Length: 215
Image 1: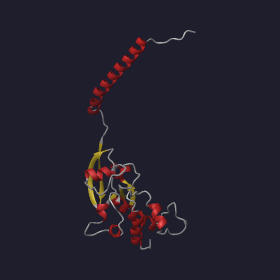
Image 2: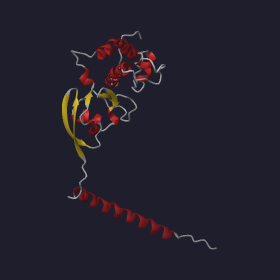
Image 3: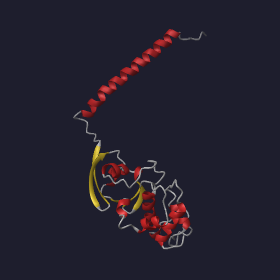
Image 4: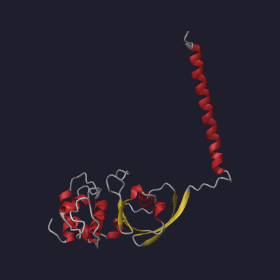
């Protein structure tokens, strides 16, 4: 059987036709998309109103539906103590507390927190009135560059509350007994907060002091 082999001219024509049709498709899409977005029959909402309390103060925002809680805090409310590190939930620099539980604020949308109580590093204490955990971090040099420190402190406060509430971790040996504050527990529970400067031992000392145990 004779095998058909397209000529060079046919190949060039096919390539030219493909490019022309692709360009035409892009042009039509670009022309139609804005019209569709402005069409009276298009009910899709791109922004939403959300109301939550931040550090005890009610805040009302209208944000793009895709806005993370981290960006709402930093860009809309100008609470820049909460840091954007990896923006993928891997470093813990953006840790805040929502209804008493710590979360990575880069991994959650602002519109998901209607009515919630949010605490950032600014809500824990002020320079003239430090939270005990903040004072312990200063005393034990629990930071160097300081970029991860707000997330570390928020996470540390929440860790002690988790242990107090008897929430077990992967290293909790006896699930029938009250969880204890130990160096192993602190290391495990704080493992989601990364310090590139390596101040981990000092962080453990600070948390241990607040917990009232020997590091």
